[in-house]
Structure formats: structure tokens, C-alpha cells
Image 1 (cartoon, one colour):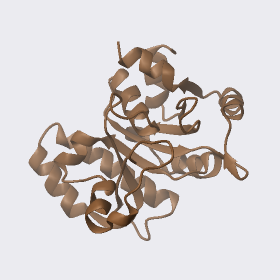
Image 2: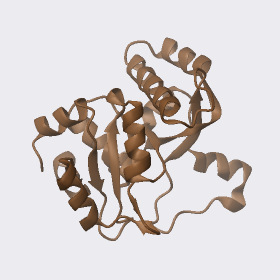
Image 3: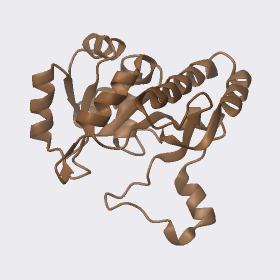
Length: 218
């Protein structure tokens, strides 16, 4: 595993980290940023070089404090015939989709960075004053929007990129607040080998899920 100090330094510098999940699961690489250092340029890089769905990630516990639920639970209640699991077996981490009220359409790089930065501020505020954080969240966001929120169920219960990202942030003692997107290739997901070459070329850290598990499940 890469040194904890190096991982934290990269994340606090606004650099992405590439995370590969596991052989036999999705077998995908996600580009991950620490949401506390997100900028429109980060969103631009996720959109152009990663290419997958750009999602905000936090923990299930923080989501529950804000009154958020998993979309799978909402679907089971409203559309039970659509309540199916993906082929890799885990229930999705999706909650609702949000925009901040100060965005215009919500989709451009600046707008999505604004929504994500303000979500990060809410998560940070939860640790200081839960009531004010919830009131601010309810006042300053609306749904549906252009930023899907993912909630980590915990690495002991689910081992997707959502949980791996939150576990990595916990490991380096940063707020549980991230932005991720799958890395795509022409017609398919970007292979582990190509993602590793991309990371080396750009000087980005590349971490495998098994390395994260080794550190957090001791």
C-alpha cells in the first residue's frame, strides 16, 4: 500500500487517485477526488478523461442524518417490479440526485463543482451542528438535479468503489466526502492495464481494492 502521508498529500492537493475494485467484481477503475478540494477543473478531468457518471460520495450515516435514503428502497416501495440487483450482486449505492440552488442548469463543470463543494460543506457542518446542517441542506438543495449522491454501506457490507473511496478517506483521516467516476474506453470500461499506464503517465496514484482492504480490515 502507498504510504498514508502520500495519499493524503495528493488528495489535499486536489489530485485524483485511481481505484481498481476487484477481479471478478466490476473489474473497473474509478477516478476519485477528495470533495473538499474539488474544482471545476476536477469535474472537467472526470468528464473528459474518466468519462463515467460523476457522483458525490459520502457515508450512509451522514446520508441518514440528512434524511436521505437509498434509491433501491424508494424503488422497492414505488416500483417493486424494477427492484432488481445488478449482475455483480450488490445493491446499488445510489440515493437521490441534487443541484445546489445557486446553479443555473446544474450540468456544466462550474455548476457541478458548486453543488459538490456545497455538499461537502454540509457534511463538514454535520460534525459541528447537525440541526443547522440539516436546515441548510433542506434550504439550499433541490432534486432532481445533476449530481447523483452515493451512500457507502461500509466496506464490511459492500465492496464497491463507493465503499472503497470512503474507506480510503477514513484511512488517511479526511472527511468522508468524495467524487468518483468510472474510467471508460471506446465501447467499454477502461482496462486495469490501460488505467495503470494512464496513472503512471500523469503521475497519479493507483490503488487496488485489495490493498485498501488489507489496511482497513485488520
